[in-house]
Amino acid sequence: MTLHATYDADNIFAKIIRGEMPSVKLYETDAVLAFMDVFPQSEGHCLAIHKTATAINLFDVDGESLAALIAAVQKVGAAVRDGLKPDGVRIAQFNGAPAGQTVYHLHFHIIPVYDGRALGGHAGGSPADAALLEKTAEKIRSAL
Ligand code: AMP
Image 1: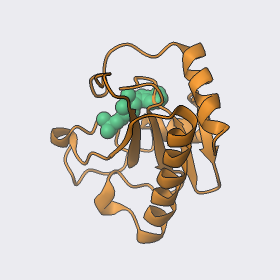
Image 2: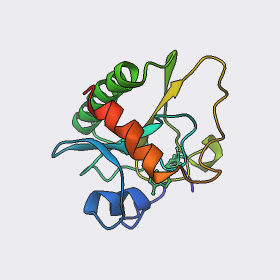
Image 3: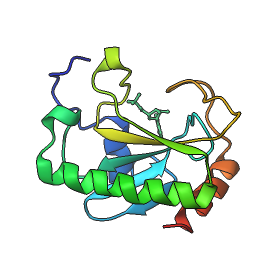
Image 4: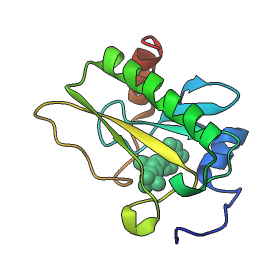
């Protein structure tokens, strides 16, 4: 996928927004949604998206939507920090397939990092255990 593709309304995150695909939600407003990554690179890896901006990447989102989205990243990132007590928190965002993007709806990764625990690979491996994902999500929600 190039940096200049047309937004596909049937991408997986658009389906999550419409409720056509399940997700483990953490935080939601009219504008934004944060939910658990099902192929987490660490315990607590989650994602934040804008619900109405049909942007594939950072370069085609309007400023107002981006401001709402990054505010959500900060809020949920702080809840990851407080709820899971990692040693660091990585915020990541990829634009275009060569840069690592695999889902073409703008999103930010919030990835807690724990001393002595290597991060898993990006967008691969096996899906997380559903019960563990929900348990971790509850710790994050309780810190929001
Ligand atoms: P990126 O490669 O930056 O586009 O990130 C896409 C992310 O979405 C990856 O970390 C995937 O593990 C994650 N992902 C893919 N499908 C789903 C899904 N159905 N629910 C939650 N996360 C997903």
